[in-house]
Image (cartoon, rainbow, N blue to C red; front, top):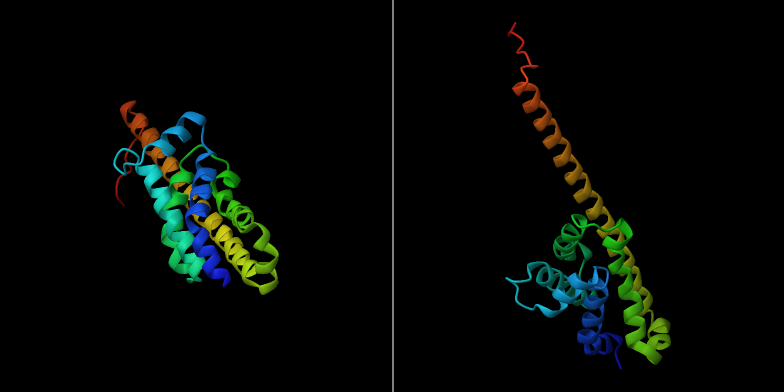
Length: 171
């Protein structure tokens, strides 16, 4: 059987396990809510993560250029960058996909490794992990920049209220 066909057949199981692995990185009550609530309006975070993961997995299995996956990856990483997660927790879900795929392939893993299909897919997943880390860093830098600007603005306003700011005349 063609490796892509086998992976495509296993896609729903892989996606479900991968999504649950991501949700398990959250506290138990949050994870339970995200798993249970399927409505995109009641659970926009869970919906965005699931949709992004579905697109990423489909694109990986089809061999789509990684740059076309970036918007879906960006949506997920933006959510995880503002949450109380370490960098490895925020982007590690990408690497967990390799283990899930190997487990789903089971006895067919050796066959796919020998054909070069699995190593090629794993290299793409590794590249996606690096891309996700870059996105995470950009998001965190933006958050720190926003916080610093807000602190400067608040400090300036406090100094103004205390009449400790004087305007310099134009020369």
